[in-house]
Length: 295
Image (cartoon, rainbow, N blue to C red):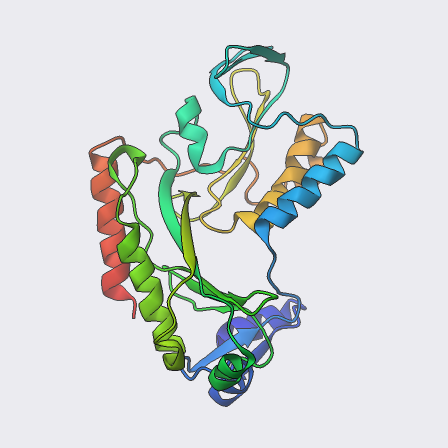
């Protein structure tokens, strides 16, 4: 953390190094030896953010057709999209913004792995409970493990915790072991805040994340006629990156790619992911390695 702060500050980023006593004074937990604080960081509600984007798009006269699942795509100078309810759509440009589900449309199957991530949330905590754990500043935080855990407080005083070891099932199917992952989240919450050991989760959920082998994303255009645009490989950082990649895709589609050419993720090659059963074996080996080498 100290080395990161020194490097970031040299680049003009206003981050700070916090030693253990300062961390304890802010988040109340002594589970960490130190960390860095970014005053420009924060937390957002992803679905509410999507609703804001939708409202902005509709205000700009964009027509949005929800619940119109695309079942197949015929690529060409003019693409033909077939919907699940039997309709046909023709378009000159196509944007793949389908994250972990992109391979189901026949694109990038050997570039990303769909893994399941998990999040759980506690019931509403009383002011006494919050005072007891000492999370005074309501600053969200995460650790620096590869299988990262992240925590935040909602406006109505619920703690949400997500992350930990993701899961992958053969050929990207349902993993069927969510209970063990929620138990892992419980153990981590109790490790960080032992005084919450008796608090059960009120609910939990999971979703698929598009994971690239080197955890780096790519944004650009592809296809025989260079009229398919995409953003992929977010590896758990999509809430931030999709906003940036949306601007890039809009410029690429309009032919204004010059400002983005120095950007390292533009048309970046995604490492090859083999087909099954080697995909399953590789993912399981990688996840096992993370569990063995990280605290």
